[in-house]
Length: 529
Image (cartoon, rainbow, N blue to C red):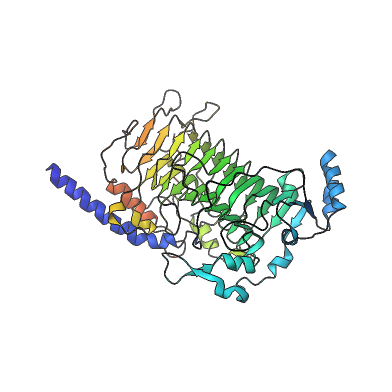
């Protein structure tokens, strides 16, 4: 009888693999498409420091003088002095004139980069420089040479730093673009949905972005690719159609005191982060905040990312990492660490019929402050690991997420384009949830999650230990019993019912299938008591 039951479970599991493989195609279209890329050399490079001296170029607008007079004290005096040396009206002009190591000082004002907007969106001068996308037959995208020759076809501001295409920055390296106001709100770079990216750093090693607001891209507000060494410091990124900050195949990077809100995909996206083998962290996010996005944080192949002392709240989902989409180097995802964060009240629901009808309009006809879903996510979830290994979730405050505090799911390797059946179950293994405070605010008041931990029961060496509930309460979980560390060594396939809902839910399409049958993700869960 036991053998027959295991055979029945295996047949059901295999059927679900076929289901999720079939339905993954619509979801793949929702993932961002990249050109073929390689990781920077991990043995060289470092997070750049903020510089206060050296060669500088000053950018201002006609009304900068009026804005400067609204400032106070030494900040006002410094800006008055800088205004006397202002030469450039547009940030891209200063970038074009900059040499390695320059500081570009941007005085208070709103920068719309009008000359860049005039560049054709699909420049015929660079049509032959498109390249094929791996694993997506017939699809071509601009290659590196395209952006080097036609930097403003897709980008309002472009820092493209490899002049001889050897993969290493040698031109426009170590630039620092710095707002000179008192706060990030004093300098605004406004994309107005005219270009895919507001700021693009491409092989732009050592790039520092400091103290300004960037908004309203048609894809990414800030986009870094194949860049070794970067720093985002006191930058606010808001109202992008998709991503607030997106870094891809980058290394030695830091997001510090960054804020992302109102973005249609995720606020922070350190995707295809460098392999570190759980011994180093190539990307660090600290002292930052993401709210009002679809996901506060997401990262396909978000390897060796360290997220700490930050806040993720009032999103659809607080944080999610995955191995679910093809075309991302570094698969399967592993070795991220989330600790000392507050992850709470992620119950935002933009999947309503009224919002769905509004979001059918083209982006340029919508109010960018109205959040329109760009991906399928389970409303009311704090954190999700969707096909990842050896991740550590430790000492976080996770509360008031009405569906689940933290969820762990498996996805088959086929979903990321891996055809080898021997690798079908190579996720989720070795994930640890340790010493988190669940269902309680830092001030001690109770704020329960729908369930503290949700697990599809697949994998080996996953474990939960030392997690603490509110006084007088118990940790809640599905299943009711969770393995303590080091977790079970014997492999077990996913619970068919849970995996079946996952397979249904990822078949979401905002136009043809906004409410998949058998899926509860897109309804706001009842507030737990």
